[in-house]
Length: 387
DNA sequence: AGCGGAATCA
DNA sequence: TGATTCCGCT
Image (cartoon, rainbow, N blue to C red):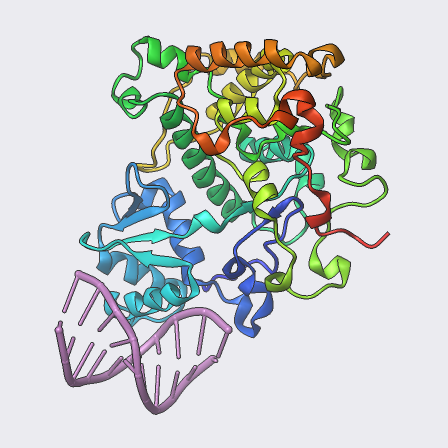
């Protein structure tokens, strides 16, 4: 029998977890594993799939298939042989107020994680860092993960988040996207398009990768990953509250809705296109997102009944042919061809069959100077290390 | 089954 | 603080 211990920190550059994710660091009993963490741990392991598993099609939702067994496992971990589901469920109910979990009403033994509070902040290269992490690329880990961050928790969270983002992107572009699941293997038109979705670009860095001062700067080599000049502010970098000697996570200046929208997730091609407002970039972005997409999807392991949208037919090929995103530079002339852009945009939207909501329509300014107007990087809201 | 108050523990 | 234990209630 062993009693587990939780990591001391959940902080990672470019990623702000919900408040609850930091509790392990702040509480005196933090060295003891927490129940939500244990649940995630079980959910991640294939051997416990018959005991507890993600609910298919519902992001963050899981079903305890064998309550007694889960309670027994939890009791074993905490050295509490008298543990039972009644007690375990009481502990789970304490998470309701903390917004860590909530109950799925009407479904027995079904709960849902509030992963929606997971916040990705704009951070150059974050997409690649995520991928590196998801890939288990040890070569990058030293630079990617601060000591103390437990990779499994982060991977699990990222994967869940990514899967959700993929799914939502797929849904938005393909009205019957979920049908694709059952059509796996058949090369339907929908499937073909689904493969082109920018699946792993959920953090948006493919679109804003190194976008500073209204100009694109993508890394040409992997060494740029750790180049300080690629950080949001030259000479300054994102840092943990501890490093910055600032108040705790709950008092962090979090993203505004602006950065939230651009930095979080769930940007369809349509939205990216709007953000960029730059037809000339589109094809090159697609190249970039396509390769990222393949790379990202291939990293998704079969995790219980998690909603995995599209299989990777070219996974092996992608593994061997993946290149870091290309350097993309806006064509200055095209920034001012507003009328032409408008008709191209129209064609583009028609082609991908995405209805454009009125609230997201272009404004005049973005037509005239799309890249400048979009300003996806709102660095003033970042947590900055004092210079 | 699920909820939440209360006391208690580590 | 984050459970654990107990229990009455719906």
